[in-house]
Image (cartoon, rainbow, N blue to C red; front, side, top):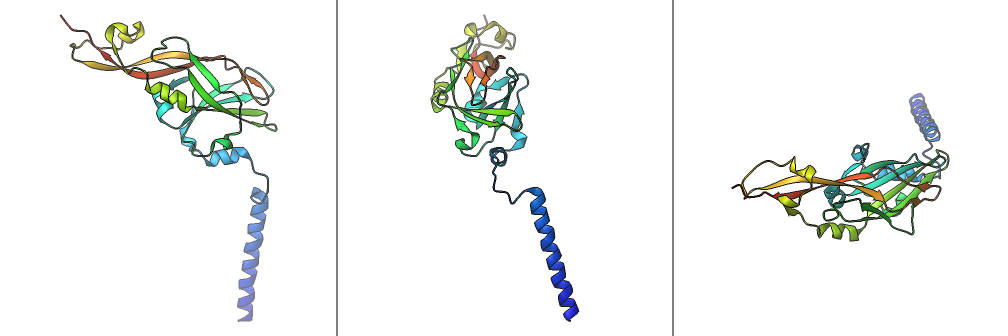
Length: 216
């Protein structure tokens, strides 16, 4: 009986030692908290979209919880990369230090369907990895401005590139189609560790309805 009790206590002791070793190896017991780790726990990694073609749907940007992210190199300018973070549920301050100035993206044309987009900006950097992340959250003012834009237009008022996407129908038909324009930074972003220029424009799209002309 004493032998069995000793074996049981021995197994418990071994298990405790294994747990302690695992904690030491994984660093779970460290006091240092990485902001990047907090951010990772607040997002759905499946919804992190790299915008290789720099194309964003304005309807989704306004209605969904999308955050524009600019990854940049702390040591080499001109290496910025745009991505979209969808599904972020954490507090804004977890994204980094809030910048004093808001960031504006301005439409190059078709302003009647595309407002100037203003963002609150948060900057975070990792000196060891030499990378920085600027997170852009669309302001409520820009969301309200989007709601005031026209959703319907006449056939004769659409750009030439839209006409090719429309089908011939009678005058009672209303067709949905996509319009787009390029957005550019109003001015370079002065981050904590670098100046971010984002020289490539962002292509913004949205869906509108077109009233077709009467067929004679």
